[in-house]
Length: 399
Ligand code: 3PG
Ligand code: MG
Image 1: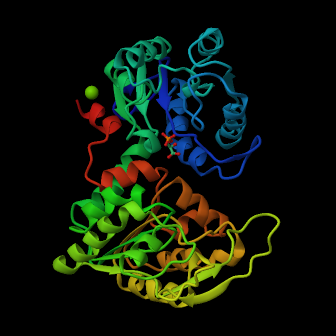
Image 2: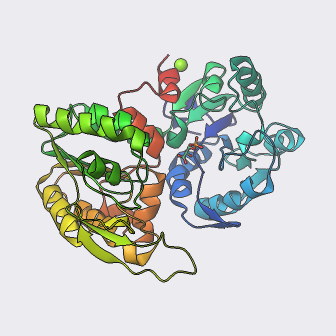
């Protein structure tokens, strides 16, 4: 018998843990188990304290009803392997299987409920519907541990309403993620550089807006960079372009100038005449960022830009990175992302890889988790935190 931080003696109690086990799958094969590994310490600590651990999580975005391809069954198997103990899997969220599975747990045993988003109440826009579903979840447990960092920006039943119904605490993963985010926002050791990539600038507007007042340098790559290049008046050929964001990008460039914040854009780009697909052999060409041919599209930052980005990161003492620099899944367009990842491994200070996709990217490129100061399990959640937003799943734990 031992205490669990924030809940006291949990021996013999049923403890519901919200984890983020939303891992990429190829069929039923887990292609990156980072989020499952990150969830293990809290689950193990509860089990070792004698709790009957009931894990709830989502996978993908099913529409409030069961869908085989979004089943958590493969995740239950992997979780059991990592825990070194069997995980009982309930084939529904709060129904007969869940009730029987939880009732069958002995002290120190672990169960996983089926995808919580198979129930429409989980993500309903109607507060009453979410609360009603949270009450069904709450009936399965005596206490709640919030440990799904990747979903703390979601006002959903298993993240938010549940904490209004059960004694609750923050799990170790969420606590560790929040600690790192505080170091990035409260008094970052300077120089503070932020690398942003990914395809859409419209996903990053809030974070750019807020970081312009906080970071010393913003390095921009990925598909989103072409809207910035176009905002500077360059032709971008067939590259991704969000025409409705050109003015916003221009205003960011102007504000950065006024504030003395450096926005660094690539000076060279790897282009091809078509987006890489299975039946086309890539023919990558490096061109100057202001000379993208009309028939081509940019698919990665070029080698000169990779070196320039790395040089900025070598001077920084705090780095946050979200979003790949190019189509890293294809070797011909992975070098920009690799250069940034490599540079992060050498940062003298705090280096943070933010997000599920960026985390999966660095692992796919062969980097190890401990090459970085911190690999966040939540992309959307960490971006919203850096935007300065209130995250419902964190706020409800403070009340
Ligand atoms: C993620 O993959 O970012 C988290 O698991 C949250 O998933 P969601 O964006 O579908 O809410
Ligand atoms: Mg509270």
